[in-house]
Image 1: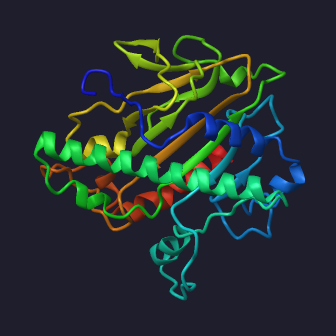
Image 2: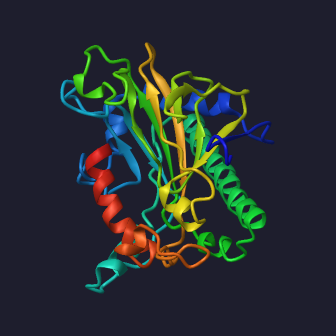
Length: 300
């Protein structure tokens, strides 16, 4: 992990990548009007959720930087009482508890299987993310690190479909080396648990060159950290820059992000150094307020 910035978790008990992959394909093959019932409020005003739910891909292939569909799942199935406070952070704390929306297709077998499969998949990924945080804490003697992740109000699991592009988008060529990309070059923010379903295309920047990440066995995950977590642990583990090169097939993947709890102090590292985030924010809730506004524009 210190050398390459990512590692594999393999042979996970009671996990079936093939089952998840099959349900994802079935979901994205549903009629658009069925999926639109689950769409976030930007696309469906009847849904009060801003993030948990379905986001259809953009039609403007020529100009968009991201050409993909996304179905976002969180840790909450119910929501508490509404917040009357005018405090922005209190409102955001409430918004972080958006309940999931699940398909209701009339096919009870599919609806039940889809929900149970991805609820279980969410828990598996959450456990992997937390185990990794505990491993860092033990290895680096940071006993206070796990406490920052005791809750995960805004952990998120995104079911992504990247449809075959029928037009070439000039905005998707890499500024680094001119490669045509399916996913732009970027560094994550928190802890990422990634499923690629044996799809090629993922590349990481290593020694100033993008290199292909080998696909793994059937029931496995790739784990990496992002800039925010890297700063919290004094930059002792790299937050690796990565991308997805263009492929000639519909590409499916699942990304799970484990972030600190809402009130976690992200202003100082485990040894008391000011973090980059700490120049503007004190707690994770303050940071996520601005970050979510940015990714809403970026992804949606």
